[in-house]
Length: 160
Image (cartoon, rainbow, N blue to C red; front, side, top):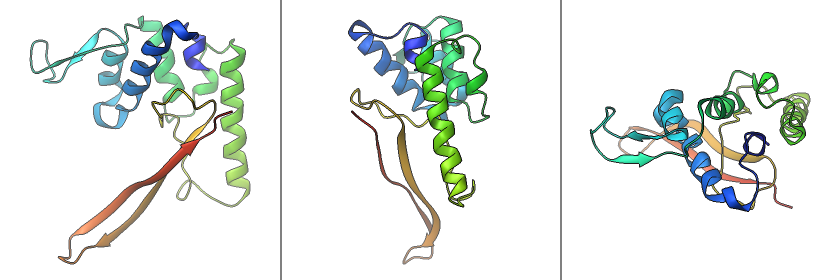
């Protein structure tokens, strides 16, 4: 809903939506400020202008980029995203995620077992609703005694 709310609905914006999704997918690696650059004009991978390769951004305005970052933040402010909160599709998405979280908690799963992360994206256009990722957090020693984490072991989402 946030992409439609910031004006990226329609077939003509499919490429920009994909660029936005790819930027969001880098939140863990680059942090909000690095992603903000990818949502805007672009980012030098060396950290400073002219250093390394340049990744062209999605060309979003500052207000659009801010709306995307608020929607994907882990602090639960998605429902208070005033720049897009009047959009019905956005509100439907926020409500749907809140319902999923309420059901998960009612089933007895706490944050230590099921974490809601609005920054999980899949760069595939056929998903029409929430997406998920399953991650094993257990640390297991390998044959050399080194600790190994499995990380992501599956994912998917809704498509109508």
